[in-house]
Length: 621
Image 1 (tube, rainbow, N blue to C red):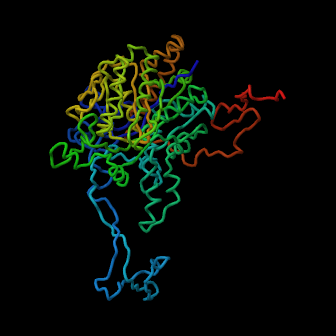
Image 2 (cartoon, rainbow, N blue to C red):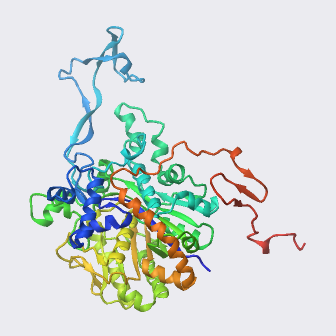
Image 3 (spheres, one colour):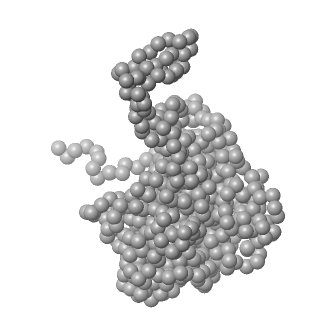
């Protein structure tokens, strides 16, 4: 039997809050929740944001609403972005050279032509120069004032010994820990159930770590009169989130890879993980991404491409003299660009046999992920036809798995929905054409970047969190930042709700996640709901096995709920093991047929079959 990749854990942090247990999802639909769910959401966010006020006070709730999701930039001061301007300093009297004092140790190693140096004392010299090429420190106002940022007051680096880690890696440690602990299964229990090489971690960031502790320090420090540190290069690498999970969170020895596909990166990691599970190579795979791109240089880089929503353009759309940062991202409406964000989202996948054996939580499962390039392109960031292929194949797979009626009546699409003028036309045409050709009349389409912005690599994870929440709760987040659908949007077969849309709670079969990345990195995934997954497990394993599973699951569910109750206030720190459990070659027990690793009950099997038996052996000649 082909193993089914079951989602047994989901966690992380995005601008809506903690991803696990649908907390971030509920922030998206906060105004449509029951009183109990609303209270729990405010309580979770108040603890994350370290508020001293009680979460049921109106002032605290107003603060929470204002300091989550997309909002005015808080990560730096957008009214005073540090820059340097090149200048040539010349004497006011052309007949006289410039003259100034300088500490001798501050003299450049290569003395510029025309400089005359005279020693003044043991420490200082006098310099005379015809002119000086200099950089003058300055500040400028960012033309982009909005971003998606994790809740104000949440400081991942304070939760563990972060040792000046880049922000993306701090979010990684929290996000991966949240995902693993959300399973309710002790990590040692999982390690004792599988062989060491049956684990895998596929993770990364699309752009690398670009703050001062990462590549920004590497490239900028020498221009600021400082030295790069020994950590700038390794901690800046795009695959470092996965390396951190292996080395400090899970301590795993299995497969690993930093897989990058621009804005489709999350689905790329999922695709790699489910391929391993389906082939029987791996039994537990952690997939996901972290990105912390709300830094001035990244924002300015995307702005100069014409990709971001600038304040001036937002004011022009609204006819106002003040930008509405809360509504900066407006998918499928009159819009002017996307809104950059930060996020970390990770999923724990298991093959269905192991999930049954351990009594794991069943959050859903992965039907499949399809990836296609665009072929010849006019420009690297421009869209092509590859996304037609990925959406069509994902829908065809869904039809095969849940039938025509399930596809047409009990699925929805989580669109890429960036909020750019080009995306609203191209993606809506793809989705509309596919809905028409697959016989769907009013296909529900969500676009949650309207709430959380575009986090680049983890963007598909943000969408998955919303999809699983929507299928479980029954409320699909509406595109609440818009008041109309743009005239050039194709939607004759689509339902693009401006308000939250009520689905049949507990009766959804699946959801689609669509991603379109720079360079032609198109990916579409089909994810089955928890209900549909349980029905599939029941058909495969039978009632008796399901009853035994349910009995094992009770303790797991209780442990997961216990973690959920204490996860927000910092009383349960992230998993972070620095320098603990480090193994050397002498610690291994090695034979020609197996390799035993301390900490794992089962050995690595070294008795392998020849994968090419028809091409091996003695030649007929």
